[in-house]
Image (cartoon, rainbow, N blue to C red; front, side, top):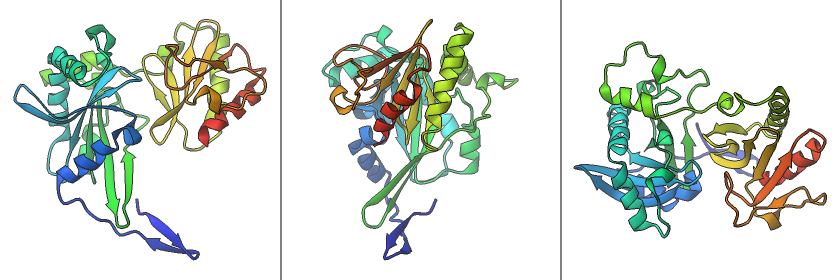
Length: 303
């Protein structure tokens, strides 16, 4: 992807300013970790069982640990290191929780962590086709993020999306590696059916109507499906969350309550109340009567 800058109706191609050291990538990414990813920073250079992890982070929405590794060169196996580190996390869960509790103000218990959503992120200026293909399993828990720096202090960060038709690692007929077998057993991929499987036809239809309408608000909207919610995200930031219940859908907007203009008073203030997702705004829907009005509320999260 090439970037351009407009100047007097003329496009000027931005010149890449390559990273000289992996440490430069790590420093930039850690300093802007929440802006880039929405993750909480736990520790840099976390060492466990003679393995040094570049960055240890925590996803407060999925309640899962995330390992981040930085690479400047492309001659390494993301699949081997990724599988090794994911198994390290699953084998030494208590060590990760202890590190979290020693660095954060709140305390985390073992049962608070959703280990099925553990993942590792590789950050590099570029990846080979083989690296992309070898990680193209929807439930492998390995993500590839490209980062580039350009002259003028401009930085682009691009999480590479797995193919929509990406298979499950469980579909591989013969999994020889014991490490991959363990990941295939513990790492889970959640889909719409996970949330809709036991719901009525009325709730399914209501969900599909709202889902399609929200996706039509912006071509950049993508579904981000986790264990306890379905989110709509743009540029890796969740803006809207669905919690699908037996007879209703609870919609949460990633905005503070006082930031939403709601003349009809449909939004409930959830400030300080535990709920799925980020933001303080809850809307309960049981039908499509206020669909267009609710879409107008959702549009406010795009600003």
